[in-house]
Length: 308
Length: 308
Image (cartoon, rainbow over all chains, first blue to last red; front, top):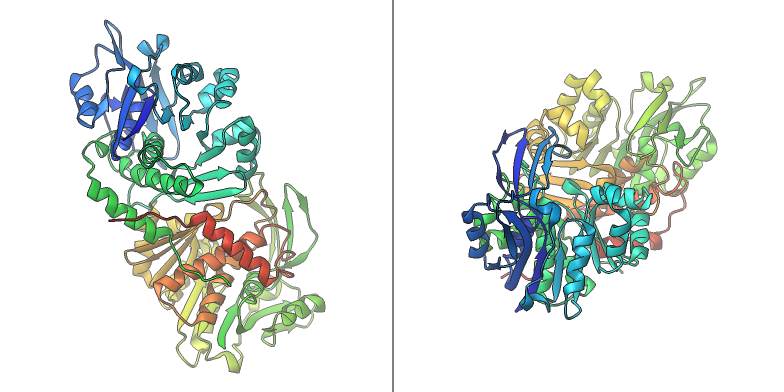
């Protein structure tokens, strides 16, 4: 079975959308990545850190999805990373109301021994030095290292970000961040510029407008599934990345054609994530629902034109 | 051979983009629709009006594409409709700097006798009463009536617009306009609301973010081709509509599956239109370039996932 190593935050989120608001609920990049990847047949582990204020039931939820949580460090007397945000009416933009790093401030990840040979490493959004430290702990060269990042690190740790980017195979980044990183407005040109920084594959996430996969001259596009209502976008990008990495870890095939399928699987899972607050939709998501919606993705995008 | 009747403006445009500006050049909805539709094997005619300031070479260009221009009225002493606009840096929004209706103010369209039995009628953006008058002149019920419109008519002639919409099979409308017309933010809900106004098929154009086709519960999506540079978006929506209607007129098949192909043909042709100012790219576009780019569309969107 394929092995997937996941690094990222396990956290509390408090979310406000036009449809309602939550108290502190389960969140964090590694949480969403792990839940998405648990839809595939693979061994996965999360490397992260929480405080001893973190409920056991959240840890149990991750365990119940066959995710190895032994490398989620629990800091005695520490407080778990906390993010609070409010989405605007169009759900495409949000204000961060609070960010408390807490135990994340001194996080030093330790890759579990039995995942030092993982074929796929998914580096969720975190300080680039933490991401780099995980790469350095691998004993065998992973078949694929996927990195997600955000504008915060471009503003505050650009040098470290450019350093870790050199060592990854795939980067997932949103459209505005790709433009910020490269100073190119055209996403085609931005992707070409990012290729030169290291990653062979560049995935540009456009939220409700889908995602693009670039490799040299090859481009693939997956739309977001048109939904009656997007309820809460929190975690959609991480769910996308988790579906992408999870599918590749399971299928052990990193051809461009299989990457296309991985992008579709990621988009498909993200379409569930946004239907409810936080992890609510993902934690009970059944395989048959996923398969049914994949069929909708086919109907949404596949056409039949004969070319001479 | 299929017959396509096109109604819309034939006009002068003056365009400014971040890449340059033009004096008065050939423009107008019917012009772009006609040039796009000329990529297909069909008989087409344009019903429109110009002043006697309109250059013969522009009329000759349309004729050279096998478009019947006998119903383009030339008003002696009249001035041709003129639009001047300036695009913002992102090319997604623009300011209208001048709109001179001129001969369009008193336009009373006359459908040529031999097109009163056209199978497909493409009503380009115009006053809804003018669009309605064309429908009323048809002697046989067209297989398909396609209507394009814009927010200007929602603001200034809503009653007439709602009246003509009742009589068409397909409406093409952009995302913001669909939201304005229906007061629904979700495009899925907006499309459902527009279905109730009459059209069986609703096409929502999202510019660089592609286009959606809705029919009852069925949805199809075509992306815009990711380009290194979009030079001038003027006419892209009309080119899309012209490719869509032209393909359907040629193939004489209005199944949902064939509509999908029509959406792809429209998106494909629009991807050329934006590469140069005005009609410059479309007027010399060769069939083999079109076919080659259709192949790119397949590579961009088609994937292979086996579902159990």
